[in-house]
Amino acid sequence: MFGEGIYYRFAACNTRQLVKTLSQGKATLYSAPSRDSRDVQISMKNYDIAVIGGDGTGPEVTRENIKVLDAAGQKFGFKLNYTDFDFGGERYMRTNEALPDSASDDLRQFPAILLGAIGHPDVKPGILEKGILLRLRFELEQYINLRPVKLFDERFCPLKDKKPEDVDFVVVRENNEGLYTGSGGFVFKGTPNEVAIQESVNTRRGVERCLRYAFEYTRKRNKRKNLTLCGKTNVLTFAFDLWERAFNEIGDADYADIKRDYAHVDATTMWFVKNPEWFDVIVTDNMFGDIITDLGAMVQGGMGIAAGGNLNPEGTSMFEPIGGSAPKYTGQNVINPLAAICSGALMLETLGEDEAAKAIEDTVITVTREKLKDLAAGKMGYSTTEVGDLVASSL
Image 1: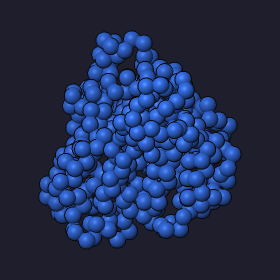
Image 2: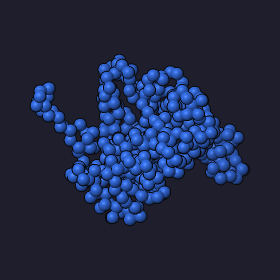
Image 3: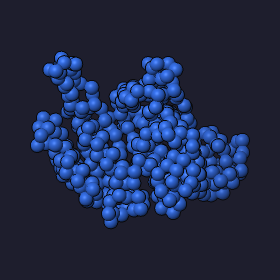
């Protein structure tokens, strides 16, 4: 791998040809510039990436993700430098802490985190999920959960007569507020008069920054340029009064080029099944986003292909496959790595490497359509590592 401050001698060529020539190993290396030739100093982009392989099959799919990312870096002229963190169930059982106190500060040094999966069969459910995933989302202020819903192959869609062009939308979920703040409590717990209160917290700041991200993303996506607010204004008359007012005020003031509409959350789930082609970008709160994105994953073919990003556009973002740790498949080399690979593409898009991100997605689509028998673990017709090899070698 070549790096900054190294000189190469070339005949006249453009930058893309230059990077391609270097990646193919066809350049002649010189230790210093020469007066009688065209000398070009290459400054390759470097990104420092934190890696949390996590539990179960997480490390397996993360290895394939990194394999593909490195292949993309060689082709498109950037380098990823990885730092591993051992957060997960095994560490928790050794230390009795989900995360060390320094975890968030350590991770803030990186623009992005690649996450494999969190969830260990020997750790009580909720400990790792709250102690690692939710804690990082809140402490790193990853206030956007971005979930593309895109059908790669109609064979794997459970909906009748729906094709890839019918299932291609994105959900923008608010990721730091709502019912997930932990606000609430018990009164008379354990008695017949027990009362449990769970409060949905929605601030103007939190709602507005989520909405503005969704408007900007809709504009950048540049497809139908239609943004749908998903809520429940007829029942949740305080929280979604704020959401709807902010949605319309921001749209009127700053995004006249973006079409806006509204759908109740129950109607949204119906349209996901009946007419997914109606949607372009959807924005919603934390709880509703959690629910509808899992339905979206099924519509696009299942958890084996669903990827997501927990984003802090001004800080550290975290990217992950959605399917979980799948402990029963651990070590068998049969889990589908495509969701993890797609999360890597989403990371590159967020870092500004749009061309490489698109190349990975296009290659995953081709591999899915032309090679895989199924998206389920053990039924793909290829092993985990072979699927990673197929994508990496076809970029």
